[in-house]
Length: 294
Ligand code: NAD
Image (cartoon, rainbow, N blue to C red):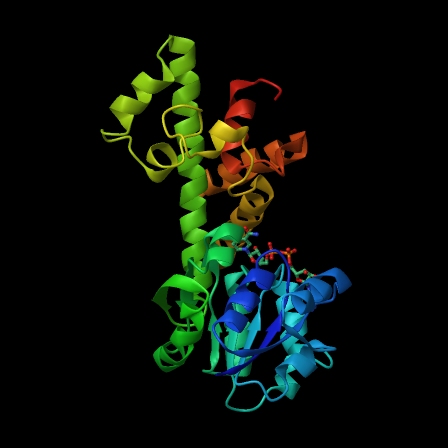
């Protein structure tokens, strides 16, 4: 049994923390929201009265917060967890944040700090099947692995501090670009009188194949499990894709990479979110590309 402080009990953090409780760990949870605290307590979690209290005496401290500024504040802000944590505690940030902040935290807090963002969404968090992309020292990764294994199926050590966030930003930028490309192919096929199924049968077994087409097809029919078949209920909401594309472009600017399609994908997803697509699955952008109101 490990004593764990868990800060950020939202849509992702709550089920992750509960999987740690189920695995037999002693988990002290904290969130700014009273409703989140209530939900954690109702499911058997132990409540802390502040982030610092959750951190105090814990062997492992985990954050699952909205963005870099929340994470920096929780660790380094006044009354934050850095001062309360014991010197040998393992520190894990599972939030999706910018690479720069992840590296700053590791510089400030040392080799025991890992960035460990996830993919798999709320369903993966509930089922304990998340994938963790981890940046930081190999020894800290090895020490964290059994804890991460209680919340996720796959753990990939991506490299030094920030590498987990870097992997997530690059993957999701590629995903957005491939989804837009897949949608454009279907829109053109529609105008040309080519059926969805015919395009799918050819492209999914030819050089156009990709995850966005083969597994997550943005039109109903060819892949029955894709969100297109349930009126684009997410899945992966457009608002989260906008966030991740923003982080990718921020990294591209800060580190001098040319990502013109990543920039265009961000602009298209921002427009779609502004047209009230924000809560829909990100594959619903096909409606905007058709030029049709939903
Ligand atoms: P959420 O908004 O549901 O939860 C965030 C929680 O953090 C909220 O309960 C909020 O009250 C709390 N919080 C904010 N500041 C705090 C502070 N200083 N101290 C304590 N609690 C604080 O968000 P979420 O969907 O759970 O996402 C969390 C992180 O996981 C984000 O970085 C997100 O990008 C990432 N993520 C989300 C998904 C998803 O499908 N929702 C998938 C992968 C990654």
